[in-house]
Structure formats: structure tokens, C-alpha cells
Image (cartoon, rainbow over all chains, first blue to last red; front, side, top):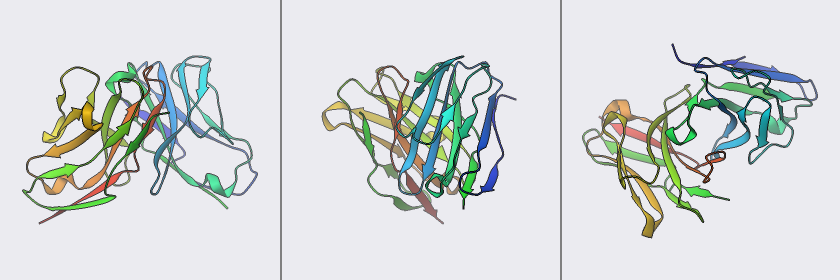
Length: 112
Length: 113
């Protein structure tokens, strides 16, 4: 089954404790992206990747890092999480971006 | 940068009534526009897209949208609402390179029996 998977789905952590949210797709897509969803703000793009080792900033990259060492994986790293990073995070991928993106199920992160 | 405005954070219709969800965009280049639907506790699912072909775009589940350049709009419609259409809907615009995507704040559709 074609899908984008994210782990963990739910995470509660404390300020400053480094964490990684994994994202994996099984569709051989070159493009992958991370978004955060906050009430009343819709989705905002954090980082995207055009291919292996090619990443770039979206609209809200501060406080986040990404890496793309393999085509299927695109982890999101929060080196020192803060409460303002409490949000619902989505990973997405696409073969041809103009055809739309496949979204993962989301990761709900709470930073205390 | 592009931007998207969705008028109405909540829209309520009766089952069988017309659904109209509004989306206006700002773009300095020809836009590429998308509508996504999000059901509770799920990720987003593509409903339809406009990429400079026909201005009237048909999508899944009976939804369609019309691109109107003069009004910078891409409103989503469905002739007859079904209870299963209750969800949150997001309009999105891409830059010309399809690298960056900008989403509206979303519209929650409630369908009354």
C-alpha cells in the first residue's frame, strides 16, 4: 500500500530535550516536505527536499533541522524544542509536485 | 511570497444543499492551486488541482473548483452536500517551481441532517 508513515504519532517532551520525528514513504517520491498545523493558521511549510541531499527552507524553518540521506526518509529534528513548537506536524511527499502531495497521518507534539 | 485567504473558518449547510467554500490567492506569477480535505485525526487528501489547463477543475467526491484570474479566486463547490463531506478544507497555492506551498487557514464544513 502506498503510504507516508510518521513516527511517533504522539509525543510529549520537555523544553530542550532533542527529538526526531521520522518520515518514510514507499512510493519512490523525490519531493518531500514537512509542515506544521496550528489552529487558525492552516499549514505552514517548515522544510522541503527535492531529492537526496537537497533540502531548503520553507516559511517557518527556525528551530528545526532536516536531513535527506536516503530517498525514502526525511526526518525532522528539533535540537532544543521549546513550547512554541507544540503543534501537529505533517510529512508529505510527491513524485511530481504539480500533481499534489501525499500526506502522512500526522505527529502531535507537545513541548512542556 | 504567495498567500491564500479562505473566507469563513466555519461553514454550515444542510444535507443536499450547495456547498461553496471560498479561496482567494495573491500571486505575482501564474498560480498553481490545490484543494485538500482533512477528515478528523487524519492527514490531508488531495481533492483537486489547477495547473493552468482548464479553468473548471473536477475533483473527487463530486467537488469542483473554478479558477477566475480576474477575481484571483479558486472557490470550491459541490452541488449537493452529503453528511460524509463534513471535514476541514484547505486551499493551497504553489510557487512557480512547485517547491514551496502556501496553505489557507482552513474552512470547517458542517453538514446538518
